[in-house]
Length: 466
Image (cartoon, rainbow, N blue to C red; front, side, top):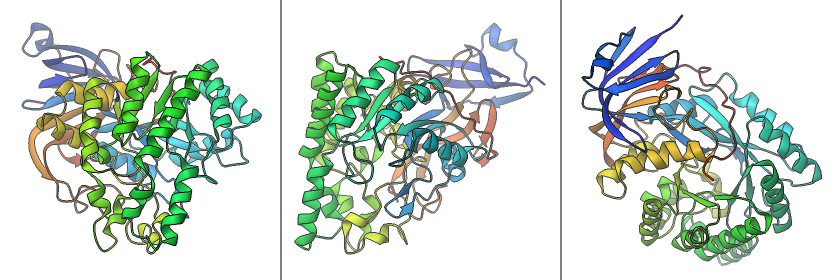
């Protein structure tokens, strides 16, 4: 049975345009847009009409970097695919791209199937997968081709975490060479993990065990060096490169220099690097453990370079790297040894709001907000224009956003399955009012109406940003 929804009277904001328009949704997709008050819009009829007066009508956010149910450091991320995607919807995100993990000695297929099983029937919004390569060998290189064919078109490698996810330069080069042939996009965690492990060992031997030392040993120069090395390996392989969670001015400079040469090199940053700093890591009574993530939080002066990178397009995407661990019982595993604190922050619910605040603060424009949070991640990872925009034929993943509502971010009111907020007490302006996923109401005027199992796996094409 055909269903039609009409969204009337809002300001439609996409990466390309801002216009007062009505949006007609039919059978889960955008059927048409027409200027509010026009004859065309006035002729439309619908089963349900939503009044968007005074609100922005924006594409649902695409968070291209989440870790639901990720096993890490002897524990597991506290958000399930159900709780995590529900929280994402509350925050105006309607698609996540999560990371399936290959275990050392096992196949990519086995890792991917494990993640399909975790997500299937449990997601509130649509989802896709990247593949983490932990063991690059002749068999897994061949498997990369098969995964691209089934819509898993990006592969993450780690220059950090020796003994867990780490790949050496030879393995990285081989994976990049394979991707250059099959159209896959290589994603890189760029930190010199071998050198960092030496510094960790030395810090602990000196009795430096507090959370703030996590940031001090994971040095800016070791992020910049690894970023440079990844870029050079990608040049040798003839492969595009996407560097995840860029946190430091020196790393941005490496990306900018590569892009100035015309190289297909891209960078992502995250809200924690834009809004938090080493001041948080240094909070007393072990509270700094809440802010332990890798790459680590940096001194405040790095934030200006990240915002500048987002304005100049040396950084293209803001994702969350959402990987929550509760303070009690999980972060506390590292009392007396910062290296045992599980690495990760909650944030999937906060990204769209924090970036709207950045618009109000003058860091970015309104359309750039939508570009870095919706359109570019969709293009980067082969989801556009199905996701990331409001256009005829696109999925009706639509958010009504109230730009005037004020809120205080708090663990008391958030929907992520974690016992603290990284942004506790922060006052911001702007809030999600209503969310549609493929035309179905998930949040209806601040009431949750979604359901686990509505979210579907999305088959991605190769990178559309090249």
